Image 1 (cartoon, rainbow, N blue to C red):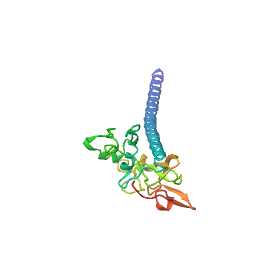
Image 2 (cartoon, one colour):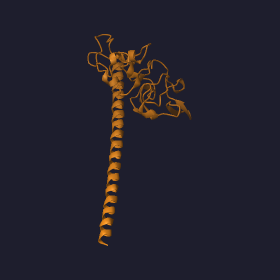
Image 3 (cartoon, rainbow, N blue to C red):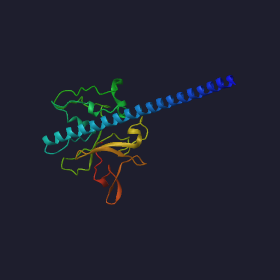
Image 4 (cartoon, rainbow, N blue to C red):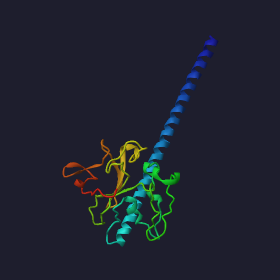
Length: 220
């Protein structure tokens, strides 16, 4: 009888030990998941803040140029490059870790070199692969406040994102995209099933990067 009690005690101890081990393992997995989620959230928050800084630089520029934002017939890098002056020469706010467009940077670099060159043209600023942000050229500070002006880089198709983070336009798990409007409002916009951003206008859903919404597809 005594031996049976000892065996039951041993069996109970083993079961408790297994339960404790499984509980600790579960807590470890949950902790890793939480750290991963917090890291992604921090990354999005930082990128959103940088997009707002780009918008602020655009507003400062417009104040000095009769309300006009910088424009270029080439691409967004050339337009953004006009923001550089003696006071502002920071390429870091145009960089978003993980963006596939950055893979085009020369010499195996993984970050902008923060060397914009000399005035007045700063031709070394935002070289190939150094800019993440797409841009709506041709607007002024008097344009409709809801028009998008700074946004996460698209795929190779303007207005369309990708659901693969390793591809161009693959932003934020293919679920949301950062969009800053002319009025300075900025948020993560939910992507539709076709990886576009829609908004209700005139009683129907409209692609916010379309002419129907009022957006001119130019120099993204």
